[in-house]
Length: 127
View (cartoon, rainbow, N blue to C red):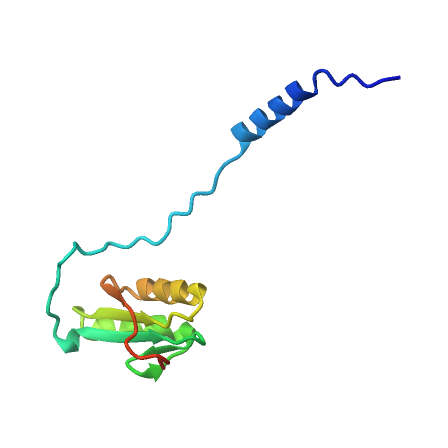
C-alpha cells in the first residue's frame, strides 16, 4: 500500500498560510522619550541638575552617594519636592547591563522625574 503524496505541497502551503494569518507579531515599542531638536541647547543652573550614575557593576549613585535601586525612587522624589525645576542627568557606564539602565530609568519616571537627560559618562568607573 502506497501513501498518496500528490497533494502534500497543497497541504504544506495551506499550513503556511494558516500560521501566517494566526500568528501575532510582538512589536517592541521601545522607550518613550522626547528628544530635543538638533542644535537646541540651554544653559541650566547647577542647582537644577541632579547627577545619577550607574557603574559597570550596576551600582547606582546620586550625587556621588551610592543608593540601592529600591531606594532610588524615594531619593529622587525627595529631591524633586525640594526643587521642582530639577533635571536628572543620567550617566551610565557603557559596560553596565541594559536591564539596569531601563530599571533606573523606570524608577526615575516613577519618582515623578519628567526632565531626564541621558548623557555619556566623562570619567570611567562611575560610583
